[in-house]
Image (tube, rainbow, N blue to C red; front, top):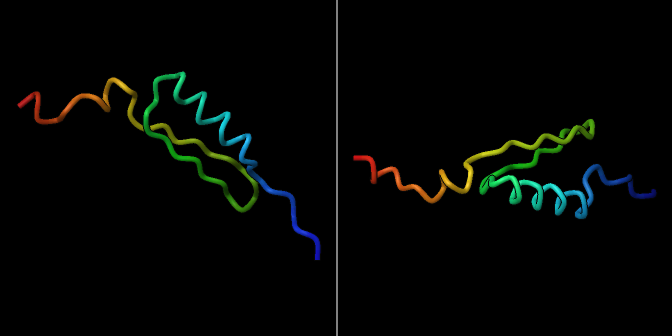
Amino acid sequence: MANSRAFLKQSDLTRYAKAMKNAGVSEFRVEVEPTGKIIIIAGKTAVEASRNDWDGA
């Protein structure tokens, strides 16, 4: 049986990672649904990631 086509290629993931980095997002997650739908969930920006929660106390 032949292998099925990949929903997400490594080159696509690398492109997404570079775009997130250029946008200032330091944490993100990529989810691929069984239907092939790709979802990118952005987390903290680089400014938020460098701030410590204890600094404001």
